[in-house]
Image (cartoon, rainbow, N blue to C red):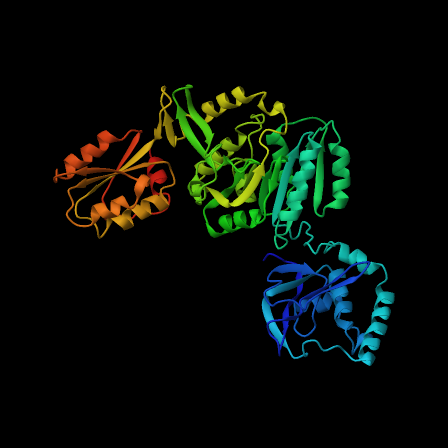
Length: 523
């Protein structure tokens, strides 16, 4: 499904007498040389990628390939050239050659043995004949399938992720962004890059012209003027070929493994539609670990968006996969079909809160938004220019108008700047050692909204209190010296909490993912 035009697939080949060593992986043909990937530890090359030639001892063909590309040219048999010759025919017919290093076969050629002089001469002679047959056409074919670094080249048939980068001036940031992007994005993930230039007046247009020849799969959309972040993103999405769209600021540097972590999240959680990264400042402090929605009485803002962990040191608290109401579009992966379904970014916003608004639309449509801390991106926040803040107040007012009656805040900030969760979970225990751990673990794992957990213990005589102590600051406990009964203990918990919502939960209950947010949606 990832490669609908696959015509040939070949595995990794190891020596029969030395299976810890790779005999052949694949060949990559370039105008200057032929690269043979082999003679490595068996743990190498464990990936799937497009290539220009797999080894003839084990090849899987789609039967339709022979109808379009023909069969083997008997002029090159027997030699080591009939396979690559036929693979050029396969690629010329529009099919892909795939190497899958996750599959291994053994071949009896003795490790370290070289072919005889006669065999080598025969192969070389046939190689010259093959070059004569194909000429420079070989390399025209290869240019559509592979670049010199061995990275997969993709087109509209095979792109899985379309990375959209809106830019306006600050060419040095764009240079660093692209350099990190191509260096740190996994070669097994087919992607394209679409840069939308919002009328840059510095050297950005000239750089982008050069970048299209320097970087594979890079396209540029040039606007005559700055149309804003939302419209630029929508332009890129409309031109995107991938089934996933990745919005990326040009003042970012992605880190190794960033995209694979996001893709794994969105593909392994059926209801996931959006995934956001952990963003760090250059000094390693947190810039974004997801977005919390706050009802801010101090500033009189019913729906405010705060970056979780802002300016804090990176720690375990910010390294848990979470479902949230919003993430930032500085690095945001979206299912393209969902992006289209909810209407993309609202262009009424100008460089601010359009990502929060978009996430709200996705949530209202019934999808989940994930924060994935294993996807790490360095963010030089707000380095793209002061113009991004010109309409911030207008954007915030628009967000209130659209969502103040529809969105339930995660937190409340009082006029005195005291902050507390907008929901509380009260659990009454009495001799509950057999059930309370499972209950608390399920609550901590599956509650996708900010909530204070208060456990009121009615003088348990078993090991309940020892278990509660193990949760430390993750829960708050009220320890009664006598059993006050269920009702009185519930009242204690209610009086000890704040927020618009209180859940009374029995200690022998196991909650499921998203339970609380789904219940809140009825209010």
